[in-house]
Length: 233
Image (tube, rainbow, N blue to C red):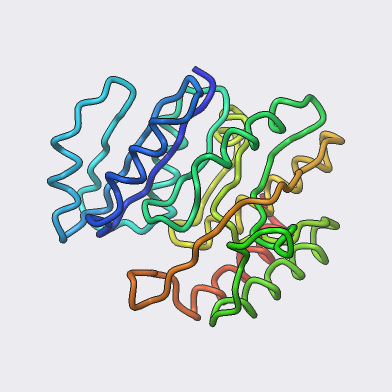
């Protein structure tokens, strides 16, 4: 199969079935790996009722945080390429089709989605919210440390060859894994004379009152990951 889609889940009963339906509709040969991080709102029970042939559900024994779930999904992936799909409705899975087309180009090491590019041409652009300053600072820090031109390293969508992802020594267990991935994929691209490419994606942000789990202190862990993995593997 060509694409493994990892869906980490924690307390997303209201959206998870809609997200999985949209992912299933993608015209791509795929597998879906759902990792439930010990949900307490009924999500876990919903997932246990699913029986699609291309769907695997992994139940964490207790809450090991999102990054740990993503790492477990990467290890289990069998497709040529792998990407993470959040279990809420902030991201549109249809964007993964365009990302996959770009990912298959020989000079591309990875493809990131950007909520920033072409926002003036899209009605659902990234609106200002409490997390905007953190996104700008972290993307600027990545550009400085890794000689990159990326505009949105905090975005969920990061697609790369599965073998490449499985070869990375991923250590983070929380939201900081996104930034460890951004750091290590940038380093690989430089080493292999390839590039990490961004394409515009749609985005429908939700607030903390709607279930968003990021907090301001997660930005500190993200910045530390960018500094740390500039120096170590």
